Length: 192
Image (tube, rainbow, N blue to C red):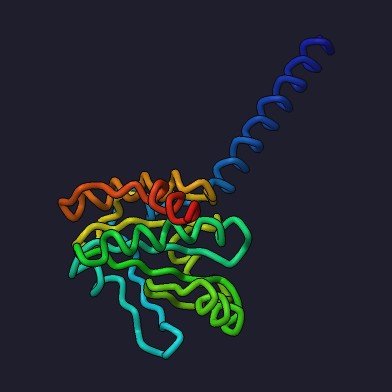
């Protein structure tokens, strides 16, 4: 009888422990992300370095927007040339490119001049933009079609230009244009 009682007690403890563990898993479950491909872009307003407001909703009402959350690290630095080329290739076809740097203002100012940055940019040294776009990865690129729907989210750094070239193909579809191989364009310039 004692064996049966001990067995029942042991089984009860195992079941109770399992239920408590399952309960904890439910409590720590993260809420579903709202910033995903196919969803509407977040309500996002930031000031550029001159204090002018940049409103994503207004920009995407005019045409597609590429938002690049970035920094000045060596990987992002190497990748910048491809995104500059992408911006150059499609700005006349309606694309707006916005780089948001998570660096101090002075550092970005020097960097922008040195790199001759031609796209729109803003500084967010506190990282609020990363929270709005629900990402911690740097860089992260969000391609948003006219009207505000997210078409693509590309995380991580690719200093080879392949990622920028893939985004270029998606931009070309949005603006009804021939795709520009930004990887080849930059590599050809570097050979000169």
